[in-house]
Length: 191
Length: 256
Image 1 (cartoon, rainbow over the protein chains, first blue to last red):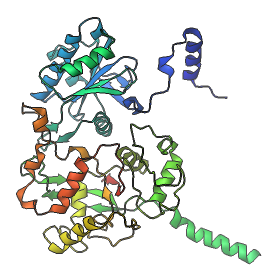
Image 2 (image 1 turned 90 degrees about the vertical axis):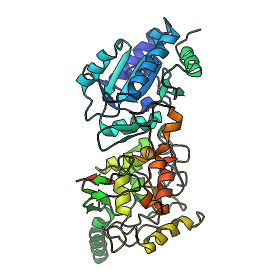
Image 3 (image 1 turned 180 degrees about the vertical axis):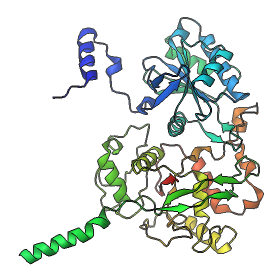
Image 4 (image 1 turned 45 degrees about the vertical axis):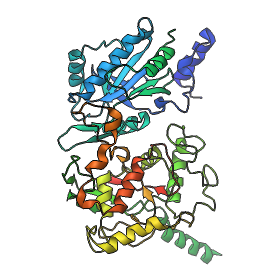
């Protein structure tokens, strides 16, 4: 009988700790049901559910987008800042590029440096074009490549719970959204 | 008895290739195409690379075969994040068509994710909107028949058909490119269905809600009479990827 390694580990974990959240079945409404691989700003391959177990703020952008996208990252920063420590330590940020043709690990890394992103909590990533389309569809984000290589795209912040379910979203860019902040605080277990 | 067996075997050998025939794709040359949706949001024509398109939409039989090979796409197994609760709900069961889903009818009540997965299984993908619009612009005799009132009438007539009439099977006459049943059978998914009216230009600051769907202003004046095509865009733009719709199916495309 073939026993998957994961099954062995999970059984052991469960017996020892009775806390095997990682092993639990993904809920059917989790976006982590999409089993794609991303490449992060360090060139490392990571699965989409890399940070399952922590709430995540998710959005999409591209590095050569000079107006709205920096505003998206600023709003994400402000959102984490507004919930304060220690809660913000419990929330990760994932921003995936619409533009995998031009955004590779080094351009993502440069963007992270330029915008002083705390890489202990932030992930900038690229994925294959088909996977980008699927992820955007799951997140409810739209984008369209223009002939000059720029993109028309919607801009939203999406909050995922620890299991990857969308629990809140906000189209407010440029300032924090009180209702969205409340949802992020709640997800992070902040008072 | 031996003769009957031999005849049966012969029949099986003759029929077998036809029942397991792979889906038929036809080549389209692409090129410059004045879409209803300008490529730059202003006036630019679309540039379409040569591609291949399925002659026919995917049928119930074909989709059933896919689901049997890929049970994660059975309606009783697919996660709700990939298809809503009406996904192939007209089938008798998760792995059986039944009387409401005839074998050669185009498969409907399909989410975008499911359509994508099927196309991938065929070594293909969904067509882009431009590819679809370009292929659908052809009549039997002209590659671009959009200025032809007879073509417009024919396309518009489909919208007037009451949705209570049973869905016809595939097998309509081919257009100039050899593509069948593209304007008069079912609505069809495209790869970029949700991006058609997005006009939130990354270079523009402002209220995202106001800017979000400003694309309607960018539809080229010349094509405004092409009501049928505009209806398609409006329909596609209103959908989410998990949505399944009674009269919506799909066909696949391949890059050259």
